[in-house]
Length: 260
Image (tube, rainbow, N blue to C red; front, top):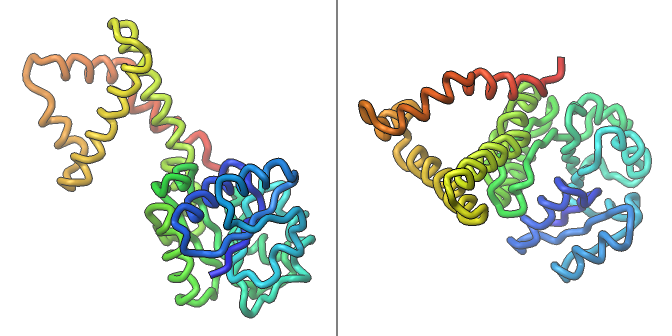
């Protein structure tokens, strides 16, 4: 399959690297500067590069628009005349640019467009990606795209209205998890550990928690009970989190980014 990725920033770059490491598909990427393209070419020599968005979409099976939301209209105007709408599929990772708007920008109300929201873990094939097809996109196209996205992690096919919540939990959520790990590191340093050592311990604790939940299928509350003994250390720490409004802070954090 031939894939063209327009934009090689943080998100586009993560997807490019995840697919390139897999090596299953032919990749063409674009960027604003030759310096950016050279960096990808050095790491993945098989990738084709271009500074010309309109030229890069020719012959692609799937076109990925991995640019900032405010650049979508400009990019669509550059490429629309070169798109074969009967045979090419367009994915957009631009936040809050829904499929109706994308079709409008492309000038085709029947274009096979899908709203896709991965996260930066795509580079390591561990993204949680949300996939929302436009109305009337054939099921076989949705499945083809789902299989492509499975290369870079897990995939949830959903409605467009669910993508924002998914992005807060998974896309933005990566930053929130890293903030928690950072806080654990600082606590470890205060207790006498070196920062690098504290980071490794905190990350392994995070991996361990995920492994237990995935392996057992248990609810987090059940897992917490397994670690918490009467009068023990864990309950003291949990109570401190509760006293500080931890759960409320997390929920408010997640809801803060939802578009009204």
